Image 1 (cartoon, rainbow, N blue to C red):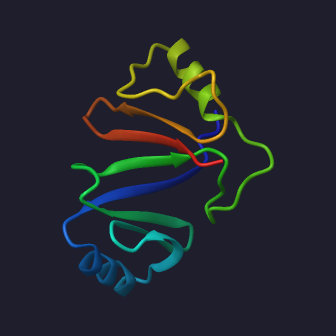
Image 2: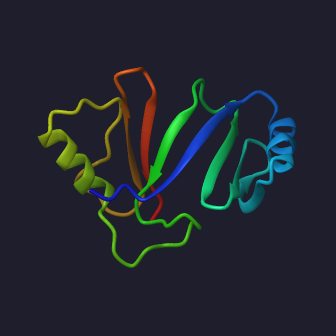
Length: 123
């Protein structure tokens, strides 16, 4: 199973303060952002998303179809295939992708410790 690019999505209180903090640690804005609510930063292969007012908890995020640079992969496992595989293994979902669709879709699980896991396909 190929989940795609990994990042952590952080629920932040003040986007600009958080962005400045992580930039001080060597992260750079990769140009995927919404100036009002969120931005994505990178340091080496490590990606973090900063999201203000969009969700309550930090989220582990996987993006099928993207590499760690946010570039579209030629070959990847579609989010709906991943979801079907996980259903067959008995996983429960908080939200599900429409398995009859194509393109952009997502689903969310919660791990045994209460951590949200988002599989979010943008292609």
